[in-house]
Image 1 (cartoon, rainbow, N blue to C red):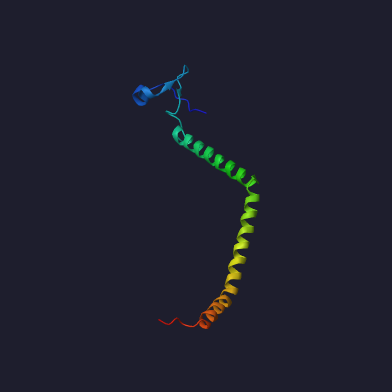
Image 2 (image 1 turned 90 degrees about the vertical axis):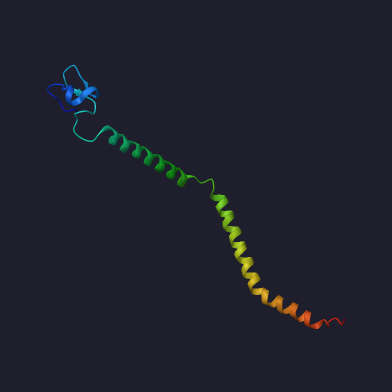
Length: 109
């Protein structure tokens, strides 16, 4: 609700004030409380937060990527298994090739 003023004083409000037929200042000039730009800023922030919340909720409800995630986990487990197998078998294979190398006689020039 706007604060009523007894009379419009053009020296104070200048050309920026709008005066109703009842002699009250209409608009932001002469009002108590925050300015319109501040209120509008809070409204924009509220709209932005609402949009972010809607996107986040939509992302959490979306199940279209779950199959891709499951296949990614399966591939990751296969890679971990392969690395473990190579780490366990690697020293035995290296020893085998070293034995083969030692059995071959050195070439004579």
